[in-house]
Amino acid sequence: MKLQELLTDLIAIDSTSVLSNEPVVAYIEEYFEGSAVKCHRLPSHEVGKFNLLLVKGEPSEDGITLCGHMDTVPATAGRWKSDPWTLTERDGSWHGRGSCDMKGFVAIAIQAIERAEINLGCVAVLLVCDEELGSFGAKYVLENGLPVSIPKQVIIGEPTSLQVVRLHKGHLSMRVSIKGVSAHTGSPHLGKNALAEGGKVICALSALSLQYEALRTDSSEHFPDVAKFPVLTVSTVKSGSAINVVPDSFELGIGMRLLPDQNKDEVVAEIKKSITDVCELPWNLEELGDNPTMLTSENSAINKWLCEYIEQKGSVGVSYGTDGGYLSHSGYECVLYGAGDIAVAHKPDEYVPVHEMETCVHTIDTAVQHFCGTGK
Ligand SMILES: [Zn+2]
Image (cartoon, rainbow, N blue to C red; front, side, top):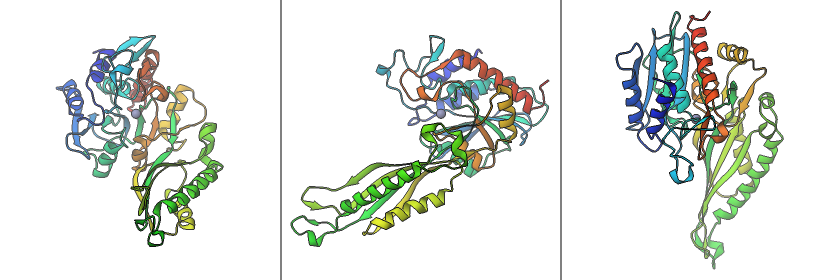
């Protein structure tokens, strides 16, 4: 099957994160029926959603793992120039939901393992669900263990416009809750205003956010000018029921994009101190989600080989999270490398340039040959 045909089929199967991804998993299993590639369908955090591990060769920590996610963000047909679920070639690019993020790479990985010849270790393709919701598929798989060993050197095919990315920020979601006492506003002495205290907390965290803007760590140099610092955002607020009632509760949603070499516990302690300094009512901070940072050594085999192969000097960091956070915290050495631009990824008319896909196919095949000992 040609790459374009395979990608056409994958895009035609709607695997928006809210849906079950069983149809796309079943399609890939059928693709490999009777072949030398072994498919392991793995459970995930949610009934009806699966992760899928493909292995060719004897399971081993040597060789190479290719990783991608099967889910996509939603698409609203009316806002697209062509149907989002029909791969359409236009201006030298393939358009369709997931073409760039990241069914394009999933198709490349499927065909790379199909073609692979192996002298050393194995080739694994780890396909996960619900990356777009917060890497829940990858998190589940790594916490519950894989059925067989897979190679420690990993390429994750997120769209990087064919740059090698060895570090990215993490994203920590938190909620601050403040408890007050409700009262009629005519008797304010009977109440304790949680919203007024919350206002002080918002100001304190905004001040802390400005301090972070001035902070630089060793990893800062690898990020573009607008993203060299950790980003703290006060994002959502819930409080108050009526204008004549003293609010008895306040909830603030905050997001923290950590630099890869920051210590999460220290940062959380700084946030808590800022709140303690201003808030006079009982409060609580909960962690709602923690998408870890990725920091792969410059000298890791995968980073060194790939940077040399594509002739990239220096390291590149990105500000979004990926499955590489959980993978690298579980001892895998990960880089991101894939066709297409992340800037078009979650938008209408998402596309991937055909020539970048062709380059990516060639690079991945060569990586497989190199790490599986069949290269020249
Ligand atoms: Zn993605």
